[in-house]
Length: 158
Image 1: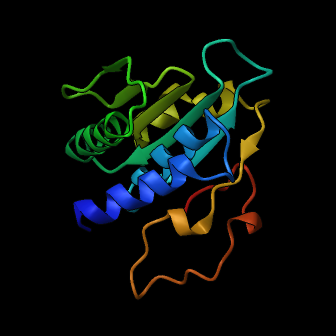
Image 2: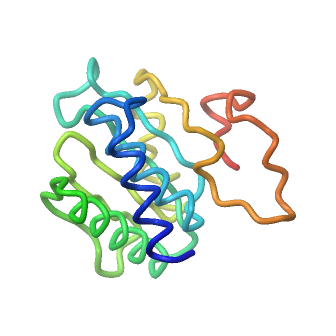
């Protein structure tokens, strides 16, 4: 996947009339994560739940190197598109990387750490935003006809 492909898709999502700010930032971050093989993606609408952020993005990775690369790409793409990245926490050899993008907080976990910190249960009352199936990495062998609507909120693995 080339940089031009990533750049054009992220810009398209951020400028889309389908998503208002800051949901467009959460969707763009989710698209990046999903297309570089992050998994178990979830966007939580925190507007009525917490004053920390409007949206939380939760995602899992296979290892710290992948999480660092994803965090770098998300931050780079947001900055390229003149979006705020206040800080990145836990980047050095951590099981949980947090990107503070102002109104959106992006959480990248190694799957075992995600289970330990269990933000999914902590924020279980937050509405879950539907993520288009096209936001997920797929190969020729992957069946992409399944729509994410068929998944329950607790069954978000793809």
